[in-house]
Image 1: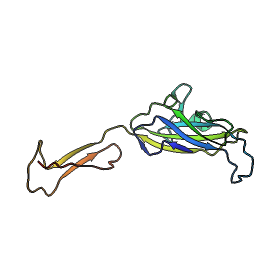
Image 2: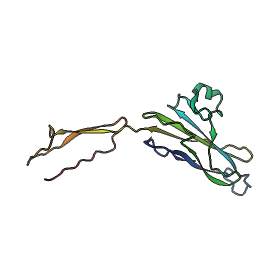
Image 3: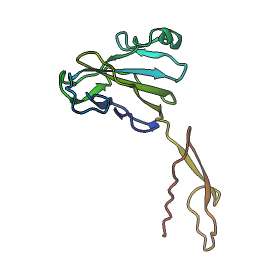
Image 4: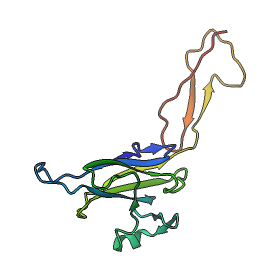
Amino acid sequence: SIFAPNSSFLYSLSSISGTAWDEHAGNPDLEKSGLNRVEIAIQKQPPTGPWWKETSRTWGYSNSYVQTHPDDPYFAAASLTAGSEAAGWYALDVDTPSWEDGMSYRVRARAFDEVNIVSSVDERQFTYDVTIPTASITLPGGTGSRSSRNLPTISGTAVDNYAVKSVDIRIKDT
């Protein structure tokens, strides 16, 4: 399963990580062969965008190519101890693309055991957002400091590329 990315909007992602385990579909009494590897694949602008080609460090696979070659965009994650029943895994930013502001991404992960039985694919999608939101005061109007004994309303606007989560204001009594 994938631990990171773990949110639908991210402003930082230095690694993709998760855990894998070898299990027999609901029968814990069967002997397990152990894990062999975890592979991940990254798509930009899903569902139709290109896929990351880790060997050339480019968006080298078109979505139409991946439709007929579904195994090609996967590359091996690191830190998995082969033969273990469960293990953590990761892919650092040296293996992943430079995330672009405003772009959406899909990350897929799958595990293989020692006899090459493949798990179901786990998937996460996120949008990379490093654009700073803006806020402005519309009432009271003007610039600089204002003094008033009767100010029933303070209003303004807040803008972000995706969604404004909250707006905080501070009032100073002088």
